[in-house]
Image (cartoon, rainbow, N blue to C red; front, side):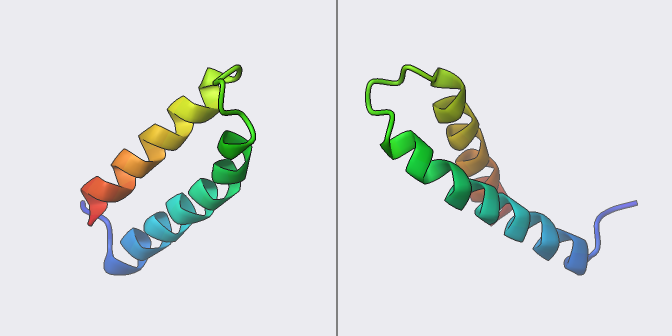
Length: 52
């Protein structure tokens, strides 16, 4: 069974909120000393792009 429109909207909103939370941390880490932050951000952006 697929996801409803409400579930898809909620998923998209959650991804956007997580991206908004991680972007400032990634900006403060330009040398990528914490690569897990950058990897997570890239993964979320790709997931958001695929959902649209």
